[in-house]
Image 1: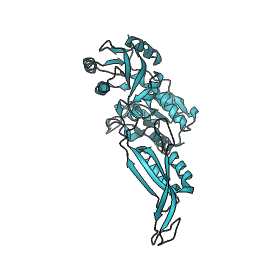
Image 2: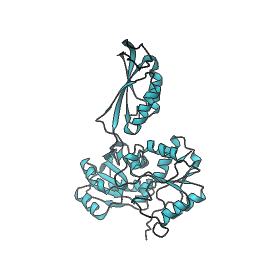
Image 3: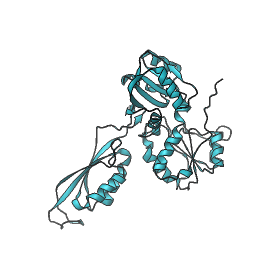
Image 4: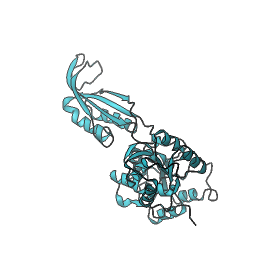
Length: 363
């Protein structure tokens, strides 16, 4: 498999255009036509990770955090030793960061499942648009076209796939000079029994949907409408979940610590209420305190809350469990691995890094 194909698969799983403005997800360094030997999956690119990639015969690293965040005017061994070694060893690098944080079945959903949380909403909605398609096709050609649309990504609603609605009607058209009509004669109005197929799709699949129509529709000029819906994507940064029964903060802390194998937790206890509504944002979620308050969240689970954000949360009555950044985002590796396997990438070529460690040490 070439790197170009891996990039296209990642763009389906977690579209790069969804990343936050400050982010630099996508290709960091790559020959897009190069064949992939093995892919090393990791959270950060470090010296230990680079050496691991060499030992494991990986010419591709797929990381969560980008190595290159800011534009570089030059790369030297002295000023940028890691980037220099990466290029020197010809290790290709792609990063999927904030786009995977907000992707449906992305990092937040994966960690939420580990914690037994049933997602009811995103903490901050994805900007991705949702479109509705209405396409008209002769009755006997509806099945191949519908199947092609599903294969191109149409018909997904939550956990349901291949959804559509069909309506029978009469279509009419009059081929003019210069046309090559599939049905009918030039200069004569034709009436045909047609099926109207309606389905929805995400913005990421727009070009594929249009291509599928033109490749699989018998007409020279297929008739179809595409319009944007007010409906928002269920994807987004973070997640909100509702527990079946209220629980004490102390009991939840112990459970979370065990489930995420976290060596410690920092607790910001703003009140003595029992917990029922929980929000989760892996990594640094301090900027989402206002969204948690707006959604009347009882507890916010995240990492890297700084001093002033902690004061703000406490003042606003929001309980927070601050797990170190590393212990919420190390799960990027099994989360992205699971998604890539679903796209038929061989399991044996997906190497989970064994050298990921937190940069902090407790004494």
